[in-house]
Image 1 (cartoon, one colour):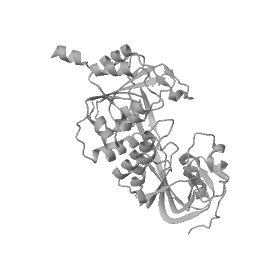
Image 2 (spheres, one colour):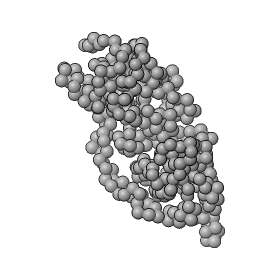
Image 3 (cartoon, rainbow, N blue to C red):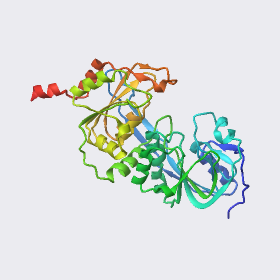
Image 4 (tube, rainbow, N blue to C red):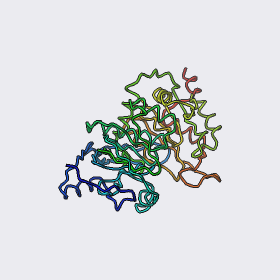
Length: 377
């Protein structure tokens, strides 16, 4: 029997740090809610990264957190952030993450009135604070559909942040069989109550750290279920020339060297998702500065050689972990980063790459130059 709830229009009156905490609190009140756990008791042995210096990422064994799907009867979605609110008017922090202290979350600080809209649908929440970027769109939004499918719960609608505006977002939704009329976009004063709110856990369990399932799922859905010809270049360099951060400052020198090694420069912003998948699934070697484009590593074949270039002050583990999960041959190169006048954060630093060091790393990875091939021939 459904409890009567008041029609909240103001901010939540508190928060639960975890969805499991809300489930337990509800059980103590005699309410029994669906809370399904998946990928439990999984560990993974990561091999160390390779490079010219000591390993940037040492060997380690990691216990991977479990994932979950929770069903919230009469749950609400609040604001353009897509925050999840329980029937007792509390924010669920672990599925409503923002890069700010808890008490500064927009769900608490927004004071404008929110008119309640009620729908008699089962609605899945796929909101995430960085869903406009390619990597987070794939692995923090779409990958959670894997958990929904494991739950067996039929979903009528999906809540997605309003910042969906890039062709890659619509293209990947179509590849997953989700039509536009199934999408509910968030908006600034959103206050949506659903008959059932279905909430999968966030894929990221620490800063840019993930289990293997988001990558395996997206590989299966976007690559293995579709026919690709594998006619792309054998060796590719991912250029960030159209980005406003993490550019290679001496890219002409870098591409000059890589041309001698048979690499083709690729600007991913110019490609559809299908073309990006074609490029990565065709390549046997990839050189790239750290960036969202390397999300396409999920579509590489085992053994593909990956050289990821970092600025010294920003070295996330995500692509090293992904390479381990997918059995890729991973190398890292860490160099000095430089902020230009328009940049404010260390993660934006552009990178100067010593070409002699890059050439040493190519040789360490067993990547031969055209000249070496000709001499052997």
